[in-house]
Length: 419
Image (spheres, rainbow, N blue to C red):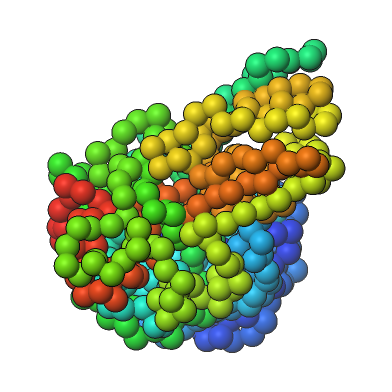
């Protein structure tokens, strides 16, 4: 039996939605119409009544849909925007601390059809899409299976009230912090946009042809991470999240020494081929340029203001940015920021990226070049670099590797099993 998945779509004080077909609420039919719900302190106000939660179930489950207005995508990234999105399945509305949380409930395989269509473009090759279907399914089931065992947001923050020489702020962000639903709809988990983006018959075929298939390692479903571009070398799990090793999430070059890769320069993901990139990058993703190798420059005033705003700490004038610890791919795990007021060591990779960019720095795999008036960051890759490199996998698919070969490359010593 295919499990159902609860996907958190949007949380707001007020949510405006439209039922596109007949839905049932407490056994009563609710006709296709536009609706608005508003959160009170502990309840949800709808149609003049208060509810603890509202569950709208489609009368015809195969085709009924609803639309949510003003859904924010790319939260805190430079492509953040709002869209109206349409979903199949049930709509659950609950009060979450004085705001309404909208949750979409639907079968896992239907969810994956949207994820693969949302993450990738319609031009992507079948082997690449099949590989992604397997890892998306594996990752989600692994997260659900261990959620009760692991806290989602870990932090070690040493607070002091006086001048501090060695202050450490170490944070990493994982997906288990969700308690009301299994997974969110944005890049924090897996990009999911309902049927808004399901226009890719190849993606649907990829999900159907791999139905129930997951990656396993020694009998357990793999926590199959992925990112846009590893920058030439994959990173290991412990560099970005828990201080534990996962034997299938290791650092290795993004290349295979065989005849099909003879024309590849340095790494599979080192490509500027617009045809290849369009397989991975949807319209707004293509607004991001030069991610295999990139450069960012900040004046002294800019870096002072940016770090103060993003960290909430007044460093004074920034004197130096010094990598303290790097992962095997070159990604910075711990970065010392020294200012005239205080010195702080910050990590892990995503926290560093948050502090050093108005949105998110492409990656933490960068060198710091001091300038006469500021700093230049010379970096590589887009994302944490752990597991499958989406652009590298797209190149592999175009070179004739099948989805099993792609998965073996990015997740060594794993098996594909149907569950």
